[in-house]
Length: 477
Ligand SMILES: [Fe+2]
Ligand SMILES: [Fe+2]
Image 1 (cartoon, rainbow, N blue to C red):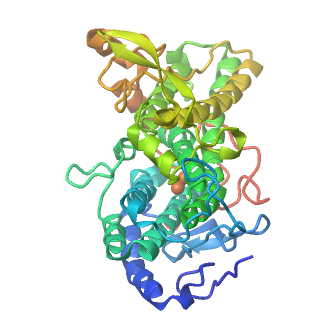
Image 2: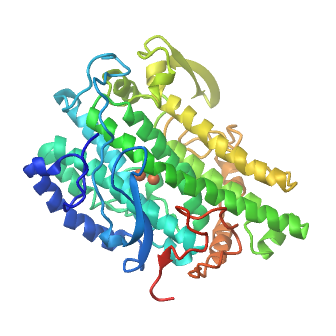
Image 3: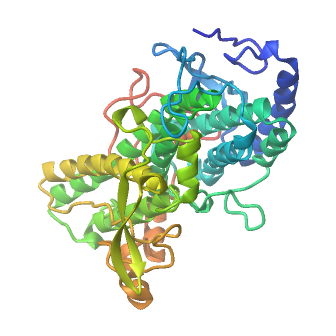
């Protein structure tokens, strides 16, 4: 197992001290990162003690340490999963060849672009969430928000390590640019659409961590298969942290659903207006938020038919999630059925499997999302409520790929712009919905003993601590 060094400026298990040039480059980037964190990280909580998990090793057991830390003092480190001895390329044209420890010249631009695109999402989400602390439903949730935020910061470190180690001067420039773009900024936006959308209420935050972080999980799973071994090892360890982000989303939405179901059952009322009056979020509104964040996240997988995706697979830079589950690792023969739009009609067509790799990854993602939705529906059922949350069709509200600029209803039927516009407020959060959701969250809850009216308490706390533990010691309460 690789040795972990925690007493250096930058904790790491990559023997940073043995590479002075790289160490200097990363130590030069570090203060810029901290400045970015102070400017764009959680606003108003930087001086608070927060009970946080910090990665300190990469083994299955005991990889993290829990304690109070002020966020700017968080020990962001560089951790790669342990190497797999004699690892071979698991897919594509070079199937069975040894993996690459350096970047092959012909794949340099592609790999750099993939790493920058992944890296860009990490600080972007911190920026999107920077004001959420001021409307938190509980101290437990406030801590989870900050946990996600610091770990997205560490994921940025992970990508910057790769850029600085393997891409020379270009990599250093990209590392700086990652701190310069800003989520939602017209002049210097983040690279991907969903990461420029405002995420300014907690229902959006939970939907984001469920749907958008889950895109991250599948991108990381696909990159974990990469023939570029350092990328594979980096992303494998990021997945360990990512699991908690999705836990926050799944249980977060689950607790909102549970609370609403409870309020509906207690009161015997199910009209959305009545549910709102009782201080809970009505189920149709939740469905609209789900529609929004799910469709934005589907876009992150890219076009349904993509020559880029085919070439990533062929060359070995990016694979399928859990490649081991497949028998044919070359995917040269197979086809994939895609609905294309021809003369205003949907027509099913078979395309070469390699060109459909984005869609293959999206399939895995949809299945994983459905599992979470089923769980929420079971909790509605348990309260005797017949309303079911559903994933809209993947053609609904898309901005990338074959279905961009089309107008489909949540069932996936082409409906035309007029119908879509007329129905928009039934399918996606309206201004009135957003105003209502925000009105519930005007007052933050900084007392560890309290929980907001619109969300159920979690079953258990963090790391064996009680739910009402003082996870954040917020100064100006
Ligand atoms: Fe991340
Ligand atoms: Fe994440």
